[in-house]
Image 1 (cartoon, rainbow, N blue to C red):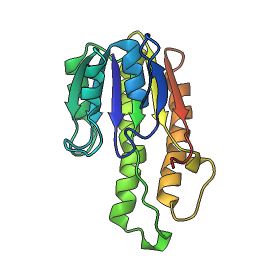
Image 2 (cartoon, rainbow, N blue to C red):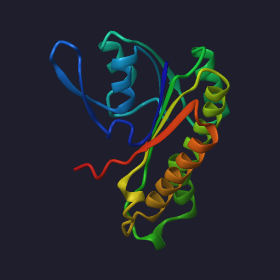
Image 3 (cartoon, rainbow, N blue to C red):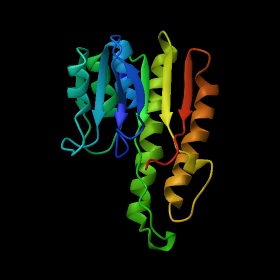
Image 4 (cartoon, rainbow, N blue to C red):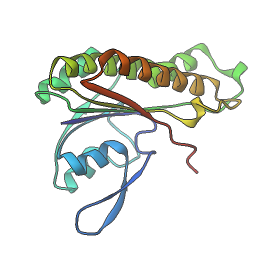
Length: 193
């Protein structure tokens, strides 16, 4: 099974996939994996969104899907919910992010903590705990969605770029810690226009 954790950027990184009949469509990474793998758990931070529901989109592709609610902080409860729904997780996609553009001196401590919690702390908790279970089992793969903002810092998005840079460093460290059974990589898309 594929577990896709999605936040504010949940549907922004798109990939073109084929349904096997020649039709092509754009899907976020967790949805693209659903096309290939079939059984998917989709986690959303908020129950109500204006964007299309990923679980409904996967179901339309005639794939098995379990929607896991994740209102509030991502943590051990979410991990236990995922493992209660599936015997194991083969792929984890951490596809969450937020980073409002504003002058750094206007960033409140609460906003800073929110950005770091979503972009780094949540993915760390999920990746470290699931990587351990993968390493103890048959292995797996973890994909962390980062940003070119981590590689080429810009003004007025300092908490965002910094937290995505931390995500990159975490990915390298966890990859070394849980290799060879667990592969951990980042994908760093550029700006979306």
